[in-house]
Image (cartoon, rainbow, N blue to C red; front, side):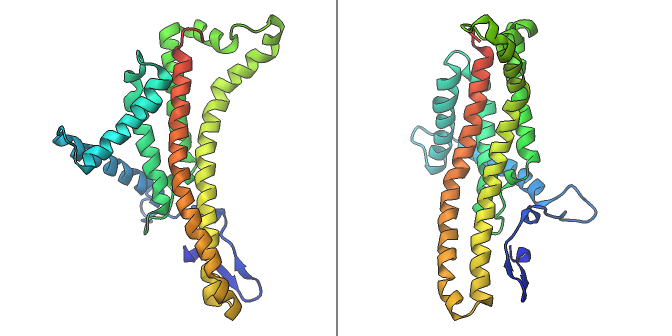
Length: 263
């Protein structure tokens, strides 16, 4: 992080900006292999290894790892998938929802893990890809179950609305389904991870500058931004979980809306 502190005697401390997120390739010969790309691969390895190890020898009385795995699975299954999509249809979508939740959460948590300290989802390309996957899934299952015409008729012309309102409502609902839904999913996840990491950078690097470059007074009060940075880090842990939960919750809601009979 210290590479992003720009200190000049005439200007003093300059806070980090968006360039702190523009990480160079790990190897000059492989331009696509950046730190976020490596974290994506690492997250897949961690999640796969975790579930393989915890389900290899399932026992009636679970150990700590098995209990943790069952807790994650039960949370996504019962709290999101079954409650939102319904007991009749949720099983087909449970693997997708569980994968999305664990994948997003692990990549978010990378932002507060020492030596990594970078949330992968603060690069908007990754949330965009995930949102497009969700977009394809809920539109596909809706069209497959109802047919193209019936599905988009239900999207554009919801029942119980006066006929003249459809002049405005139909294009709004179409744009919402085709553009707004994936866009808001991606931007919400990206913006929260970007902003949280930026806040941590500002407070931690500010405290470091005050401690190293400041006078006696600044050195004494440098503990304040440092303490705030630690507090924001713990708060960011909650935000990281909530953003993974919200993304998967919206996915379940869109799937439920696409396959429901009244839609």
